[in-house]
Length: 317
Image (cartoon, rainbow, N blue to C red):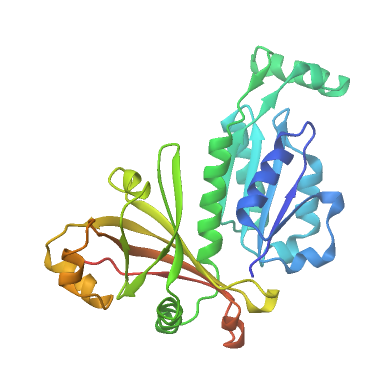
């Protein structure tokens, strides 16, 4: 699997906190300071470099690390971020660092924190001089925004996922559909605002759609208000070299009763139309239009592909 290396420096904890959050979303990942770097990390596939900005400059250790490791950094997809109080200072520093590296895949300036009581004397004096120089009134500031950090993490994940060496699309689709048709139970997750529901449920797969037959339940309080769903289909875990599981994202719809589509699904499930009509309770059908499948499948490695493959289903007209 593609591994992410996060190299950072942090004086008072904000940049380290961001590196930690990024590593959670970009995992498998390792986050470390420059003095904790090991040569084996050069084999990681995706690199993120982060630094605070003090007195208008990045931490010297970060700049030195980049200079000392340009030979292999130039061969990797590299993203940059900094934490600071001035977005213009942050962008200027990241642009300079990007020029040194030669090519980067993304960069972002994230809000920093200034708490004067935590500063050492050297930083206090430097900050006072810098604030006088630029006409900046010194006061405690907290611009850290977790939502922005996680949004950036997801942006980086999309970039990272797009860099995964791809198996031929027909091969991936065939393998995915074989997995779906040889399984019949999944976990369907629906939500609306703070209401979340995960349901173990039997499914039927057909041509880019999944269908569920259900008497009812809390999931039906979410779907009319939020059609976005997530589904997990997987084998039981036995060992690391035999992983098989997929995360599915798509849109959910309730199929109206007494429609051709409703009874087509009933027939596909091998049920009798009159039997369904004569039940004492209504049977409801949920249709999922699949958008994307992220499939972690160890057998892909035996086919000389990356074990994680992503497949986007074409939009149905």
